[in-house]
Image (cartoon, rainbow, N blue to C red):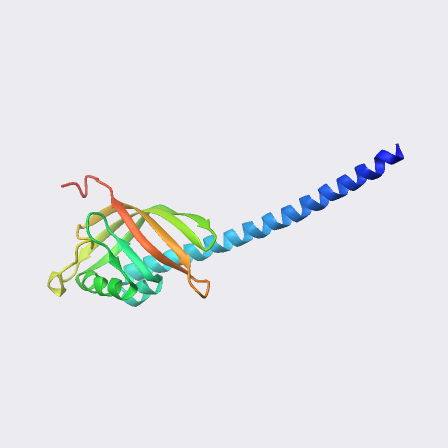
Length: 176
């Protein structure tokens, strides 16, 4: 009986140690995941605030240097400076209000994350003569869309939007 007890106790000890180490690493991973989610949620709050404030500087601050904008049905825009140029008439001609229809759902994959969400954006024209909107800019008074973005961490560990894309919903407000 004693011969069986020692190996059994050793096996139980090893299993308990493994469970403790595994649980600790799972807890650390969950904490890191929570921290990433919180950082990305803050990034999206900052982005919404930038849009509603009409601040190009604050808007591009959340973007990765190699940002790709891919609006539906038109050619995209690549690079932070090109995106900033795209935004000049966007904010010069209107103010914007964002309604969160579905909050961002974040899937973290290491130093990259996929973020999906639904917004309804109201465009309040303030000065149509302030510039011509480029293809891909929101032009309707109200637009509801499903967004899918890719965010990555930059060299300092800050989350930045690397790809911004969406598909428009057809609703009674924006049907043609």
